[in-house]
Image (cartoon, rainbow, N blue to C red; front, side, top):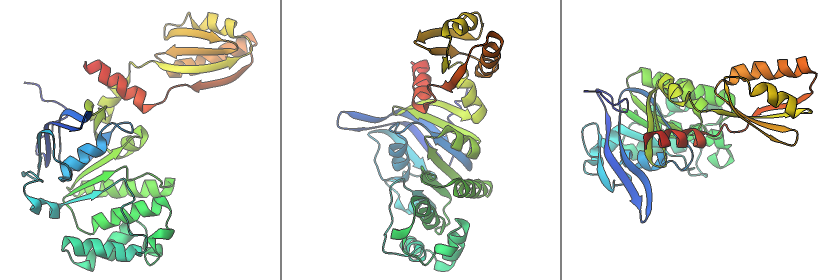
Length: 312
């Protein structure tokens, strides 16, 4: 019997045939997956259903169909599990009049844990220098880090982060990614959602990808890359003699189509590196002036819609 790559052994979070609809809108459709200790990425374009799925895992939403189990219990029926789970929502769920220190202390009080860990949580997200400033004056990236600190102070076994890197600068992003990986290495279950493939690739060894509320792909990052490997790249090329370049490109085995619109060529290829090497060389050999060579469609939504179509 073949085990689905969406399911892991020793799972701490199990989602079984879960669907969620709001009136006529289906937000999540028949998703089965699980998460265990380590860092898992929940990947998909905006509106894919990631937030709805995470809220069902946290017990904030009840599935319309199917079941969710967190640490062996239904979070909607056994609220004691909340002490072992923390959510960092995508929304700015902060009190602007509080300082970062007061906000994290408040989170500790609500969870019934000691305030001894407040300073440590603030240091972990690199907010010590701003700990006594009001959150209202923070940048979006700083507010994101304050929310992460408020989650960490509760010492959760399961940490769920919904788009936690939004608004962070490259240095902050690298620091948070390292923090998440370190927490995962300690044996915690870390689930990070993102619509940015490169971010998930840097963080997670395992990915669950969803589009339009449905499971699109699952497994290691390498497996997700393999699933995407046969998607043709669409490239825009601007040259002063498009017919000459088109005549050469159409002979390439890796080029699947070439269309021309004025001085612009729209090329589909299965081998982007090969095309990237070929076009400048051909332009040089033929004395053609090349002004543009750029991908036309790097949209994750297009990639994941393709994955969904493959499942039908």
